[in-house]
Image (cartoon, rainbow, N blue to C red; front, side):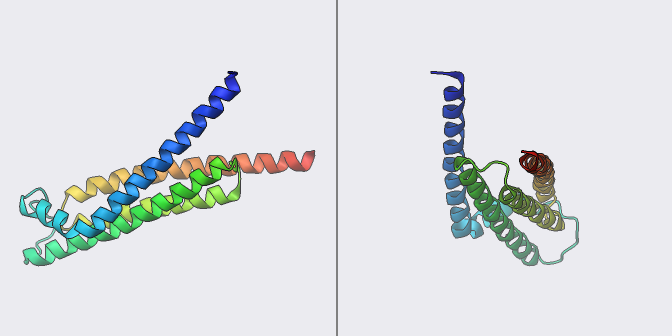
Length: 165
């Protein structure tokens, strides 16, 4: 087996594992939608969440509702990210690497990370622990945006070379 064949086999395996991981995470999002209230209630009730609030929301019920709403909104953004990842991997499997469609998908993934960041920072009003999730989402969004810019530059170079030939 040549080096190129090994590399192609490795790439195919990575793409298949990514698709499996995406399916698993979409299933987890489905479970989060179904059992989200109970997840929020459990984490709120045992004191993991809600003990250290940035605001003096008088009613614990109002704070819990805001926390639960924030949870569901972030799950929606996670689904957007996972659908973008699925489409991106599908494009890579079809050997469509340096195409504008991939940069649009990376923008969608960045948008999802930005949405999670925004709502986690807003959720920090109710629970400081959500801010940590927002910081991680912000970091991931920045990385994805850097990769998007890199691919944009590669597409520009590819188009320029195509015109030269």
